[in-house]
Length: 259
Image 1 (cartoon, rainbow, N blue to C red):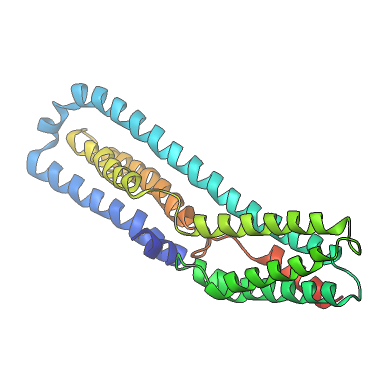
Image 2: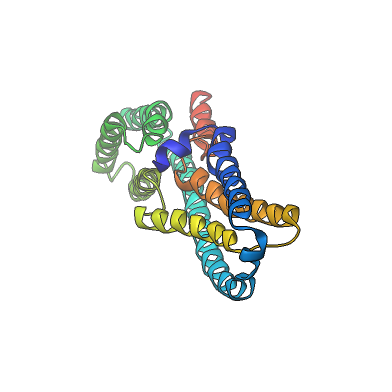
């Protein structure tokens, strides 16, 4: 469900997650005020106001915590891409030279990076990983082993090559893990239920000025469900309109072609 919502255009997600619940809130508020009357609802204001303060604080803390967590993980995904690009550029420069093993290493690296750009991003958008990219990474390790066998010829380079390869592998694994979604299903259930209950608590209040009451309910609904929209938008860092871009890797790949 969250993957589907993450894939929607931002305007469609806003309509579904913010506008629609707000319209439902307005309809229920008007219906209850007409059916029960503001005098009867006003009798709940004192006790309901105290309880609503507690409910609001609890949900605000939960929502803020979820936003902070997904934003940090989204930033981790961005950093992983940048670090993978940097390790790829370093590895390419470490293997400079006309030797056949170095040429093979650069070709394997170029093939890996090309497949990452053409396959991995498409697969990560669907919470999957590309087996072709995994095979290309295996080939890259095989090329590195060929280089490392000739320690006398490349004594200082072999260790650095595997250091950068290890970084590339870890960064790709980080990307693939975060692409499956950040927020667990149980947390999603609590977030959605909490949003409905928090906004629904406003139905127990009644004011003489019905326009003011309606406006307060609308504002609260927009704030609560906008928070959910933020979480949904970045819960899958490589999916939808708000996603981690592959531009750092694109720049390195273009740099390979100029050498």
